Length: 101
Image 1 (spheres, one colour):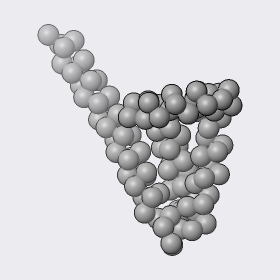
Image 2: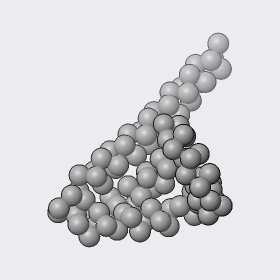
Image 3: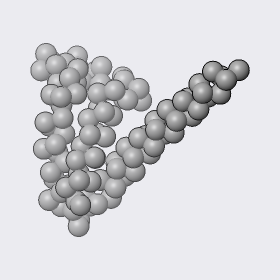
């Protein structure tokens, strides 16, 4: 179970580091440091390797502090997934109603 939670958390950290608007300024500054950091933060696949390595620290130190950070990220990611699923269902339902009119 810990491993599954860590995988979800790594995916959440990857998305946050590559795409979250709140980190735009920080991300652009880090990208400007070198070609390596620019390439790294421009590619979710590339950064996911480093995020997975970082996530392993939380897996190893689970009882000390890992559970808190991982749980925070998992709640964030699952809530985003549920939000997207609910939006898709509502849009489908609205489309069905509009087609009847």
